[in-house]
Image (cartoon, rainbow over all chains, first blue to last red; front, side):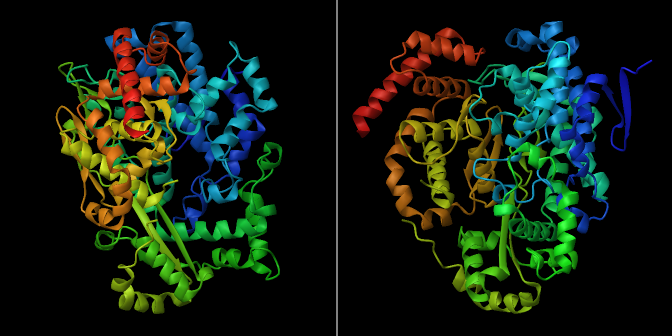
Length: 440
Length: 182
């Protein structure tokens, strides 16, 4: 007899359970492609264990999305005000539909990733394209539409797209409060399962313990809550929050995020390899861009790129030879400067002026800059206190009030130039920091 | 178009102005204040706003606030029961010294908006900002009642009488802006 439910072993969630309809997505070509896309690009050159792929991450995201859905829609966990504001939560057949849509969206949320994931996506796609837009194209593809239609009841691809991509990347689409919360379960800043899974999984594979936290406790205490009880001019818009008993696990998640960004995602050597990979791809890809036609994109994974990269590293006549050689022979550019509080106080554009000065002194091709912050870190969410009040997370959590922002602004230089560049910067830093960028 | 540090200088001015007027600069205040500056006062901050948390909301602006915290231009203070508030950080003075012309150029508009919004709580901000969003995005000349009904459809936790009041506030404000700044 054919099985209706399937189980897949997973090092993070032990068993991931899926039904036959979800299995169809798993077996589809766009999803199978994720077996060959590294979750953390070339971080394995720094953390050798970090060779995991988008495939298992997507399964983990589906598993967690289902668990959270079951907790927040359980009758005993629904706040009175929310029952009034979100009628969907009391209608069984609608809950059934949205649970399915949510798990499918979780499974599909990374379908559009380029080879080596986020590395330099902006420069390697035509203007106005992103991996999220490619995800939309995959979800809407004939192969996937056929699956959506065969499910009972059929799933609307537009719902799956909304939940998988979220409002940040679907600017022309209006989300109802219910849809916004469903999307928040997957891509939310505070408790999105995308984040919960990648922190746990990346830390496990990279071999760093910073990403671990008590996600079981966190998930059990998640609730949909009005932002406030309505006093003091507060809004009652529904959003994801936690019961008071889950606050420490929520804090642990956000600390884990800070440490993982500081230690792994923003590791300077990893960022340097990203730059060389981008340089290689810009030379190797036709017109320096990945295709946006999904029939072509589906044929390009990390494997195809790596074969070309290894070949180019060995052959001086091949396009992208220099960048490929730097990756393969580990002759990556090295960090010569990073932003720091002293310099920012002297000049808010310290990274920019030092980058320009180093390019002028050592040549444009020999100097590179990379900067980023981890994105939103003001984690405002409602907390259902033991006495029934709703409080703002920030007001009762000292940890959230003092959580630092993970960010970096690195300047890299060709390795053989680093020592003299250090010396030159020592002599000229103060003068450089007085330079201004023209205001008008 | 205004990008990078110039845009940060305008956001910093808005925060300082709101604080000077006794306002509480939580993220909602900054989000809605910047939305009014950009869409009503035509200050070219170029953020993409969508209808999301508490009305018009920009993820780009949220990221910019994080960047400003990372660069010490802003800090955050918590205070029960109002939530987190943004205050100028150790790098704020240097930003102001580098961009005096930009700050001067938009000062009047920034002062006008902070005067109007700094006394509002989050729920009131949510209503007036959603009302401005609906007014700017619906067909021109749409009646006040229709716009109020649209607000309730988009944000069911807002009551119809609150939506009508917010829309009246917006209509008055639009007229005032036309008279003062045209």
